[in-house]
Length: 218
Length: 155
Image (cartoon, rainbow over all chains, first blue to last red):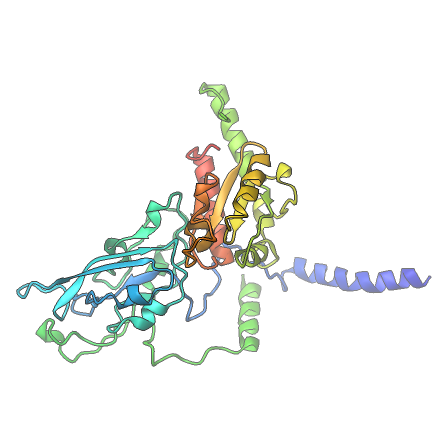
């Protein structure tokens, strides 16, 4: 008799959780391709090369990121700016900029090493490839366009969320001192805060509550 | 080994049905080698639930699996084992190289590790990340499904 009552006691918990899960209140599964998990603010995704608001490239081709990279996946070559038509405010600009995303370990040391905040990390993580050549990102793919959005390797892929590109973490902190004069002294912000302006992250309880709210809504 | 049917009307329909069936019941071999395996386990667990794609059973035997997720760094000593497991899998079979170490050696550019498992087995999908999160891995898996359905990857 003891075994039976213990069995019922145990299965009551299982059954209760099953019923509550079926009722939809405690579903923990996120339906990934349809529903994206809210990524943490400091998520380390693929890189982006930023621009100043006047369109100048921030990268000055100093190769500090390549030196800091523990996986040695960054290749940079700098070249002198044309004085009449400069690409970046300064003597030099990044002429070649390549990152091998398959070798990259997304540690963020390049971001820390960059003296001009030219390279930052986005929240993008969907870039599986079928060959190794596709994973070498050149400057074309890395450099943000003048709207402040990031180009994607596979824009036609149905799994790619292009809206996410617009919310990419490409912040702009200061204006180029030798850029277009109209932008002198103007600070522009693009949605996400700069490095000194993080709001405190939610505690674990708040995060649990948020995810519960989100799943019960959907 | 050819796994596509000859190209007439009946056979292309059967081929499509076969491709659909293959993508909907792809059993991964459990080949977790390092920290990527933790993320692979998380992908199979409740929060991400690979069972939605019919692939929650990580088979312990390569003879029962179609897909090998190489999750983690492959040392030179592990390379023959990896090849043997791959050879023991029945056709059609696919390989996902998960993470920086499996794909290119990652930050471990030294004599101990294979610099990319494509030197040992043919790789269909490379998933970047260190380690790739569950959603990254699922993106790789869904890309593989997509390519199989379109017939871009046959075997």
